[in-house]
Figure 1 (cartoon, rainbow, N blue to C red):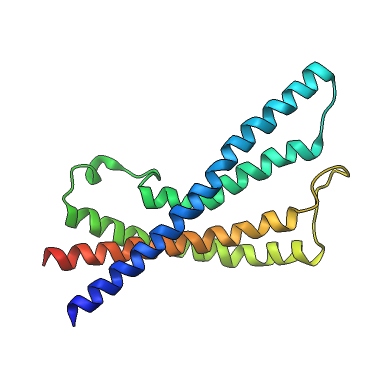
Figure 2: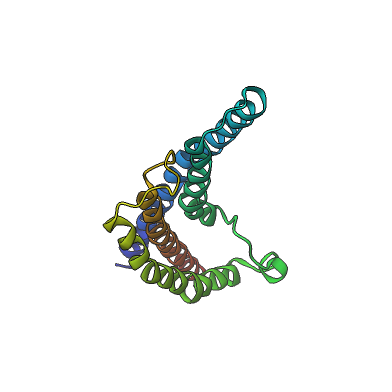
Length: 174
């Protein structure tokens, strides 16, 4: 019976990791988009003397999407900032305990708070189908704001994967 639970926990954790990885790989292309669009903007402005608000906002939207949607994959890879004074020298069980506590008592509550506090902000934007303040800007600000909620969900899911991996480490070590 214990083997089935371990297998299910591993299966769920790996599935959540694959989801974060897939999203991370997809949004990583936005870095290239940002560079190319920014290069085009600089070229257009300083060589041809023309500018584009929509292209400037494309760079901003790309950065926001890259950051918000890529954060779960960064968490999966262990790329977020942490105090490595203790963690780097710790054994597997202590690392698992730190990851478990961090996910349970920091990551999840903060993401839930951000989600709950952002809901009215996003809902208000959808009510008016909010767009750019600039007349020639992108009309999709309401969609961009929605990604904030998606960010919270993805981080909580990746935190769940971290919790499951930590529990598996405790079970294997016992």
